[in-house]
Image 1 (cartoon, helix red, strand yellow):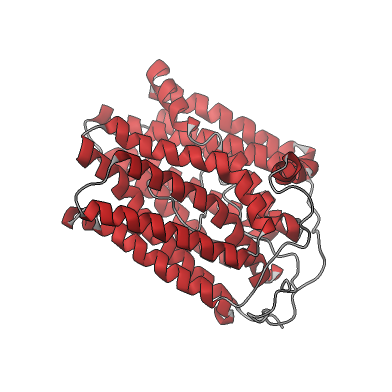
Image 2 (cartoon, one colour):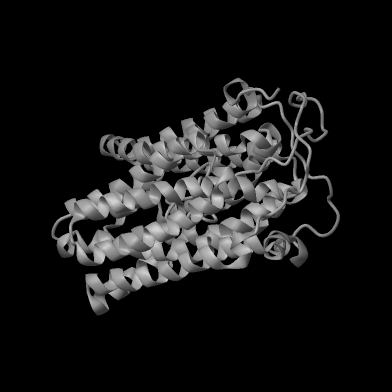
Length: 448
């Protein structure tokens, strides 16, 4: 009989570790650009912090997956926590002393992004050893709920602390990282790769995750359509709504309401997911999400009311989050353990590479054609995505599990170097199919 998640000691520790890291990261994510704006008065330099973070993530995401498959994952997580704690502490001291040069701020942003690219695949690789396959959908939903709650609360707390003293959000993040390190150190389960042949950063190793995804038609189609297409289109849709309902920048109430509804929808989806077993209905949920987003774009094109737009975006985000949790669980059910890190990184890379372009496209459409046509054209892109996931034979197929076993014993003792026996439980992936839904990252890079 499988132990309930609430009785799984190592899962609780990993959940707490992520809570401390994400909450601290969200505080600094708001505080870092505010710090640059306060010190320099330049919005361009403040925006450069986010650009550096995104660029560093995209460059290091695939190598990070390779590292997660080559090093014992719990040890790698502890090294990442130690590295994050070092750079955040250095920034805290610099801000407290009244001198935080731009070079140090950008270094901290880049270092946090690089460390996060390694940490993410490692933590979810370890999750696969900690959580049985039958409970992975519930575990993934609880991680999403934790992260969405931290994303709602973190910026508010970080902004309040920044108002008291600019160093306090970074000090709070350092404390969170310290607590995260302690939680990881108490985890007993080990998870290491079975094979270590070949050069570490060879082309074959870097492309192994992408190659694996490409060879399975279902994963390939859903990632390209629900990951790339929906992430891009929904980013354009929400930015258009934010701009159109902010009265040309004269009022932030309407646009702010829409964005708040998006966050609330993501949290609602994460809380709802464990009740409906999304891993068993992932395709139905993906199709429903795509058509709901298409309908939402059509309604917003004709009804210009922030209340309607906010409620529609919340519904789409809720469905997307549930669908993503189901797909993520199914994805790594079919992934062999020695490729967990590389597959996680590859899926995250595919879904993230076009995400920054969505708001840019939404702004361009809004400027060129106005709000109604911007919503209409975005809806056309969403409709194409919906048609593909509904009727494409590859999207209707089911991927088969890689393993057939189920974990039956307790976690491996701390002193053992052997991999923990387990079944085909998936690790969580960085939002490959989240369309609207954000990734569940275990930490947020400073300034991201």
